[in-house]
Image 1: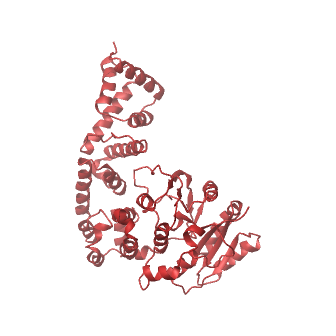
Image 2 (image 1 turned 45 degrees about the vertical axis):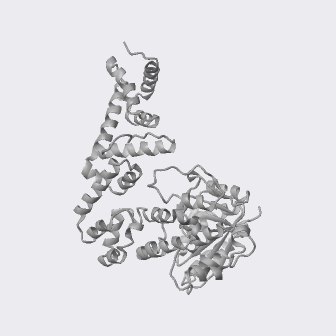
Image 3 (image 1 turned 30 degrees about the horizontal axis):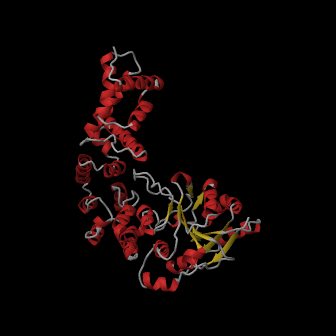
Length: 460
């Protein structure tokens, strides 16, 4: 098989990680026409020895590039995307973190997509778990703005974009790009800027987006991200600038994309992570003062809440966030309520274990409803969590009664209640599956009662 894809792996002082990942992937990658280039900037020769071991074992799809420990991060990233050190020409290039590898089913999908000549093959890696909305149905994008709108929040992740050489990178001028975007300025998102800059230069653009359930990614536990100590600088200053300096073409969605990324729970979307940053002495009053005026651009947790966290006034934070969550429910801002629910586990103590468990199930139903395009969700016409819990309890009670020989008046209540409340099929199915024991009997009774309801009949 001709090798048309280059996996470019920058690494720094992670020999054990490289040993693990190369041992798992090299043979499989070779099967699908993938060469692996290790760009090593380590301070010792340990990583080189690891790579040499695999080369000597006969892995002809592995190459080592000694980049040296004294390097500029931007220059290295630009060199990689400019084809520095490659032994031959490739149709596609893919920058991959040294601790990341993929399941064979994913690699096969990448290989199959590479045969179709797409300008970009995009992997929606699972790094945004708290967005209830389903993946957009579009699989092939032909305009950069729609792609930026739907997937801009994922593209800062290095291992999301497999880029075609001749249409996207062959004419790329790294010197001109560096001068325009990064000269004299710190930044960590040159791959992001290169992607959206180059997309605008492609005629008859075609971006293939794999489905989320087609992308299985593993991350070695032998090494961790190195940017945590610079989290505020990277994700407020450098990330904001990376978005803002994009061409004006992307202006309609810049602010949204910027905040969608930084509202991840591991960044600024969870008070638990903010508390951890405080405990690690990264979140201080000085940090609050420095970013006070721009904080609302990167987080929906108010700067007042953050300041209370710094001052260890958690009770005030809990009250502020509880009022905000209740407000989201009241105003039917369910996606926001969903995110807050899953990033504020203390809600279990406030709501009570049972109410919390029911709300969790209702949010699970909500996600299923969105995936099926249902307009009226389990939260339809409710304005408090108590109303939602009462609705769930009532439907559960009526469905459970169908498992037994119950009175006709109960039988006659259930279907009208379901339609009057405008409940979805997904909510009905979910509750039957999770709350009923004799599910087949409940479904059979429901179908009979539903037919009778439509005919205007009642149980006698």
